[in-house]
Length: 539
Ligand code: NAD
Image 1: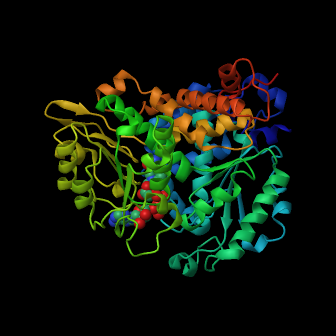
Image 2: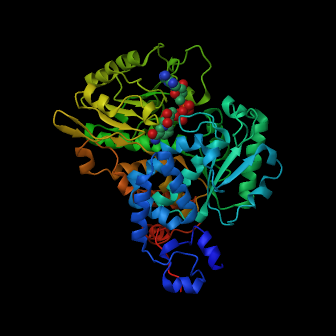
Image 3: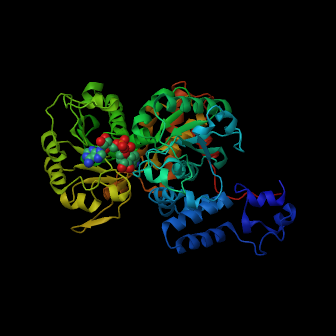
């Protein structure tokens, strides 16, 4: 590489931190201002700049530009200030960034593959400059966060998720490839808007869509045979099918279904330490029967089976209210395939409030994307049946949460064990401070991905998500529980990811799914592979 190449390659660029010696060695003297800064000094300056911006979208743009210029500094900033930076590089800011993606797009990061490239997807993947891609996050933009169909603008999501893989689990940035499949959009304002960057046509569906995905998967297997793939923000008419069709074709998983399931189950396991009860004793009532809800129920069933129940007994402990009311066998509408295992023989109930009164669940889990649905009577009823009701309002962003932390604590007289999808500030009630947990998938997917990558797992199994949930729950300490928090602090996320990666890799080694032999020291093996945001010295 020439000196100029080094300055323009974000993986090796150090900017003003190149030493006097390096400036001469690389022939870049004069291409930088004269003063040499340390990484710590650069960090302080960068932090000051981020905080000085006038909006979170401006901060997102600044951080993206930094990532494109100097990845070491970017990741050091994110890992050292994880609680402050995650909401800027991922939800909620990434939602706003996706809406503006056409106008804030600065330079390529990731690949767009559209219907126009049918028949030549493999050829296109060869255009990616790095040959050893090991991790792909792919979306078709149909269900971006709670924002719906954003088509090609959804690119912010795979880009953001892969940044989290590096920041939270140390997956090397050069392994990562974000991909957006452009299959059209149903979003009328995008179809008619002049600035839209994607194909202006309705979404392709059915056999045409499936053939496009099949070609894409085959191309990935050919060009990047070692890659692990994460399906991200697909609509639920495709998400379950794609996962089932491809999870054994190439190592792949769906974070919206499986990652959410593991983080929610970990929260329930954490809560059991406060309720002093067991998993088989729980009765879960979900508001929302989509990818998140049925994913959580499926993993609960696996965990409850491991704890002694039969699958039928465990399923009988999971109940769903969706937009049409309680999901029961004879409801009169055609139930989607993923809801059928939970459609019990029971009289129909039209409202959540009535369902709570009749079923008397131990845990109420909101994954409906509909705010203010956990009302005062509902929370109060939960607190009447349970000394410590488990109430999780997981819908994102904050504005979609089924209830707020303050409402859950106030309406349950401070007895609720509350967690949410987006963070809430600590809340004081009658002199006691309650700190709610954030059921954020970033506790799970980076560690699962790292463990699967390091062990070279042929498949990412449900058991791996179960051990990930159990590992996360085991890391909740007395300090967390004493304030009512059922997850560890986000500041510990790299250690959490390491522990989960170890548990996942051990599962792969034990079940014969690993394609590399088990090293003697699995913890050290994984720890030593984690990317550290420090500068290398040029000699
Ligand atoms: P989805 O579209 O697959 O499912 C949504 C479900 O909610 C559907 O069954 C729908 O019928 C139901 N629903 C909608 N409005 C309702 C209402 N008023 N009453 C009852 N049911 C209603 O979406 P998904 O992927 O399951 O995500 C749902 C929500 O969960 C989103 O807001 C998402 O942000 C959130 N989520 C949170 C996390 C997390 O916190 N870790 C992870 C994933 C998803």
